[in-house]
Image (tube, rainbow, N blue to C red; front, side, top):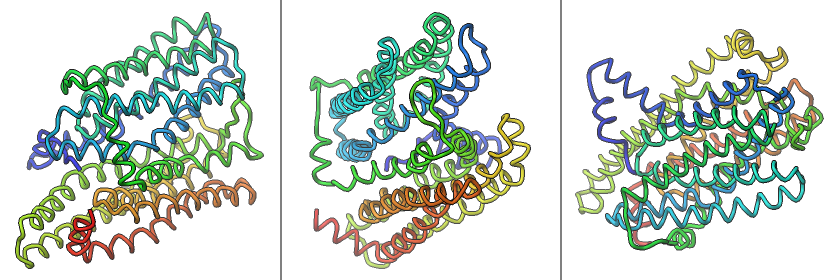
Length: 456
């Protein structure tokens, strides 16, 4: 819990409509900028009509990117929350010398995990040598980018992250235009890998320059993992919950095999991809509320405990934390609910604008509803992690993963008109279990915090 940056706090605290609008725009770009830029890259690449590149090769390229991102999220989930917790602990004690060595250790761990997974995948798929090299480069670069984003995210370097992605996607398009006509699919993958390589290099340079240290490595995140093993499980389960339904559909009767040898399900993938854009309001609210109001209230509450304040003061501070949490849930429920309803009502026009098949209309509507419930469940998950309530976070993440897998399989077998309902059920179930559990702890937060401090 590092809190939002001072410039953003000033914008959001201003009475000027223009300043507040700028603040919300910055918050949106901080949360979704890299994802939006990546999606923009894919759209531009599809409209360039590169010489010698067929539509099937573009589809194969998209399938490779889809699998690389999914696998990288799962692998990064192994250490993401652990690394963030370790870095936050070092920042809390003002140990700036540990930042760069900790990042180097995480980057090395990322390369080892991604390299091992890529090796297995290449042995199974057996692509052409040049394509295998390109896929290996892309997988490694995406892993390094993910590691850099963990540390720069904790350090609140969102402008740098956004600028690096803008430069990286521009380089990816330029390199793809040069290599694709000669190398085909491998050229597209190499171009995307080059863009991510630039992003990773910018991240590495910034961390090493801003936080110089004589120590090359710091594997303290492994000690943090031993102290908080639930964090690794939560990270993997949360990432898996995002992808498990797609994985089930990729093996279903409506899937097809791309020229890259990877199975995809455009009927589901396209609908869920478009629906993911509808959750931007919820992402902004989560970012501002959790890292702004919720962070401030909990810091004040924790500070009153450490200072030995009287019981009425502690209880007032706890009530402020509860009120901030409730306000966050209500705002997401209302504002994101309106955005979701608007997307569902405008679904025919939106799908027509994005050149989607009419049958995607049904998947898109269900996916929008599922995304809405998943964002509420995510608010519970992130709030639990912020408060170090790892058991609740673990229960929510595992329940979401298991319910998503079972729901996707059941709806896949039931028929195409039910596609996406498993994701809706998983989000609703996670919310119904997670909210009462977290709310119960918040009602006795002072006792829970005091006991957890004694236990540690």
